[in-house]
Image 1: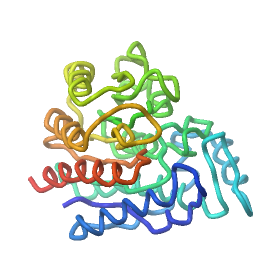
Image 2: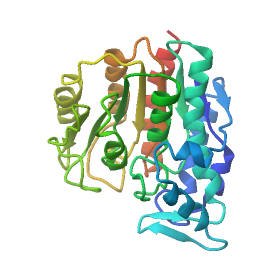
Image 3: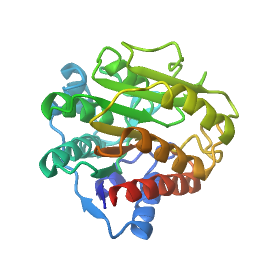
Length: 307
């Protein structure tokens, strides 16, 4: 059984013709209704400022609150847009990601699985800066909460979005208890994610060249992530982006539908057979690729949640 955190409130975060559009959450909702309606659906809660401040500077948080537009659009950076009803989406995306940790702590099930069907994505958001469509770093706040509030002592975040999660890396690069592993097109936006960036031995980057196909992707992921991490973890996160798909218009990596099944399975088999899993939606901007890639990811999550 997958526990899904989802809200129709995400339809109110209107970005117009922006790539991170309402159509994305409609695609996700269609998939969940078509293939996963028998799973457990939970409404996310609204995050408080104090919760968000586990990761983000309070002045930055206040600035976001104070600059939600009363009409029209507000750009927090050239790529990150807000409308008058965006704030609740920001808060639910954080709140639901943290709710999953609370649910794990309460249920005490070793193999529980959660998928946070949120928007906007968050892995580019820095401590004091909106970036890459997101204002708050959903997965980083959740992982920090798990570490400092619920005593998860060793956490792994695996990010397979085509863009490097600069915000997540920078937030945790000095934290020996939270590991971050990312495969991403490089050099590419946002410019970070070189293989030489290792933090305190907790950062593992896997740069993918332009045009990277299935064979090369699997080889590089195995060499730079699977074969290099030798820790035991008590919580696994996926930063689950589907924009490395060959159909996606925002990047130039040529993964197939089955690659998202493969990467999910190999990570779980090595790191998470007896620990909880939280997957948080990041990118994916071609609707066919988002639907099929996410479906393959969820199929594997469901398989391991049932074992």
